[in-house]
Image (tube, rainbow, N blue to C red):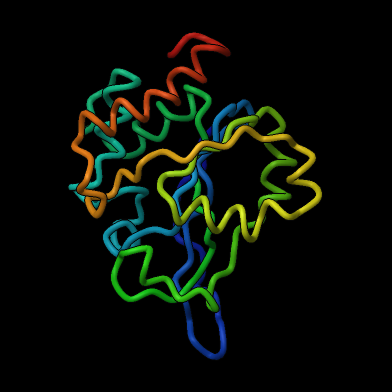
Length: 191
């Protein structure tokens, strides 16, 4: 059963109401967790992961999992969870002007509760970072936790699906993201 990504209440920091990320999209049998940094403005407005039309995430996964990237959002989420993929962000709330990760104000970052998440998702062994900032914040603020270290997670950073990463074209991004399909095929056939 996938979780509806509906924005939680804003988080208050120093009197400011900061936007918060969506809850995870996951099922109890997830094997792979894909982590972004924090939703961009378009995603927050539309209440959808990777809502910017130029973000390649859904086109990449449409190619990898064999579905039309223009399916209804709920259907795309169901395909991910049916294929043992969980989706979330590292940062729970922060202050940022615009959508670029470089604009996230470090001192305002609050991270999600990964100890609880992993306790509820015992099968996850692989964490895939959608870009550099997700990996940096996870390693800096989450990985030092004893409970997380004990999980012996295999972690891979893949190129950001964001249009801000223009050094790779779509096909190069698809090639890199095939790592997710390889992991899944080692554990079970794609559905």
